[in-house]
Length: 288
Image 1 (cartoon, one colour):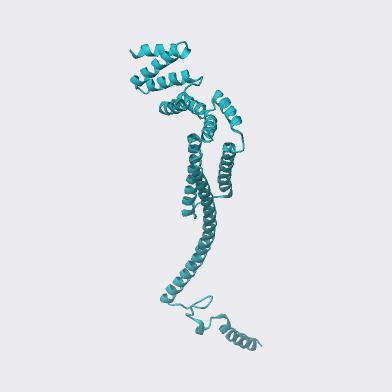
Image 2 (cartoon, rainbow, N blue to C red; image 1 turned 90 degrees about the vertical axis):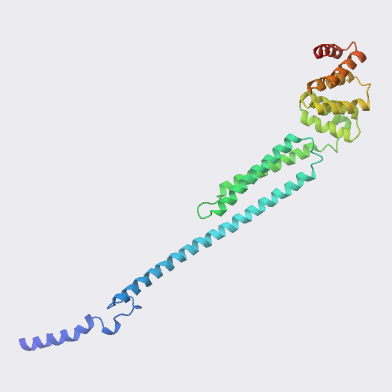
């Protein structure tokens, strides 16, 4: 009985042995999920194969990143083009109104500075696009830029509306211009006096006030030019003593003592009892 059991066990072991050991026909198969029986060269090939597969996976991930960044670049370029087009439209609008706004140097300068600030932000935006893998313009930053641009637009539209005097009478504009002059709001007063001169309304008086504004702002050459124009239009006005005195002072401050003396003497001779004549006499004494 024991002998029979021994032979049965031996036969079972011999039958099971081929199942437990790998078949020799699969050895060295590099395409197998679990290759075995590889030579040293095959092992190197298998290692290289795995490295290539890993590299392909990495390249696929990098391509996905590039595709996403390309979409971001396209979106930002569209935004940039839209903003640039808006700037070009307002540049053209400013050029069209250059003649009308020639007297508003300070405001025009402020507007140009606003444009330059926007262009600086856009330049920064372009630099960020160039380095899109590291940083990009977020929604908050873009909204701030848009808000600044819209604020400038609203300010410019308010200014243009304020400068439109075509619907008002010359008499009302003249009265308002003098009030603005008294309040020392010279920029607003200048707009109105120049409008009146263009419409041939009280040109002598308007030129006189423009001369007074230039005089008070220290623009003595401009003041002299306005005074001269005013006197050539009408030399019997009540403000002639002041006009002549301020002309003399303007020449004096420009260093032209000869012309200053001539106008001081004119004030004294033509209006001897005026307060301007007293001032002219004192200034003449300083020239000697």
